Image (cartoon, rainbow, N blue to C red; front, side):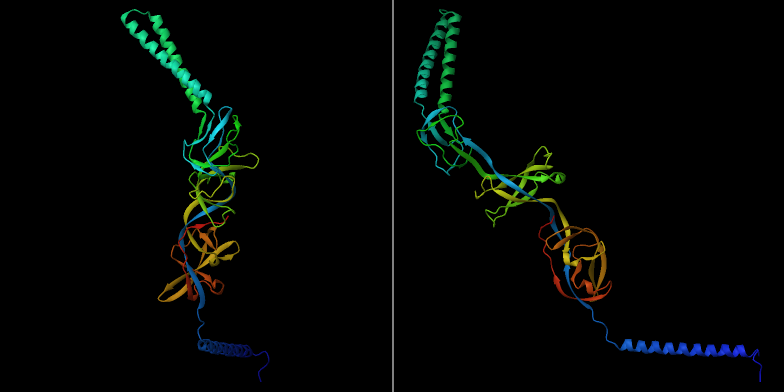
Length: 373
């Protein structure tokens, strides 16, 4: 019997440990093979079902909303140059008139008599001048007499022209074509300068004045397009363009007045109407995707792009930069190209490079879009 401190004890103990480790490794290998066999026996996981939409390019703009008031393209109060009785009224309320149409005539009997008298005086001065010129031509009249007759003729001519001009002022005409307003006087009434007989407006186009915050000054340009609506005609959308900007910013409200022009071919717009204005600033071409395609993570935005090769569709995750948000759509500034396909439903069920099955493709239109503020 070997003593307990025999040198053969250590190798035997080590051998037992090696044998134990061997059996453990064999058992693990067998277990892995069994698990692999089970996994290989399971059916392959089907691809995730997704809905997709294509990336489109469209014209968009940044909207600026405001409230404005309409003014007539031209507007004037019809009055008289001097006090007189009205002899004739030649317009009807609500009538459309052409430029230089006669609207009313004042009493002019006295001026007609004065004009006739001035005409007689002018004709007499003209005959006297002609007679003196003939005599002076023979040397029988002095130059001073000829000068006197010339002066008398010039005075008579000027007096006749002055009375004729005053007589024309007895007739009030339309300064431009337009629409007559309400009549405030009657035939035979005595009117004086400043009394408003009626109003005349040119409503072929309307001026629309509205205030815009000064922070938009860099984007405001003449010729910019806009649309306007009013509750008076809820089904109508009126289109126009910016005509000019005011030359100063209001120091209290920090706004600038913008004046636009709206064509009014139907004549339905009236001065004073309140209009809701949508100004289209920064018009540009942009890439658009449905807003549902965005996958937010922290403060970043991602999209799942579908790539199809050899009949197999897989998704690739891409980080994108977004711009203006639209009505259900969003502007994409980077990492996408027109015509690419993105997942809009089912993105939460897929991972990068996973296989997918497209069940519905939504094709976006290429119409112009307006951005939300």
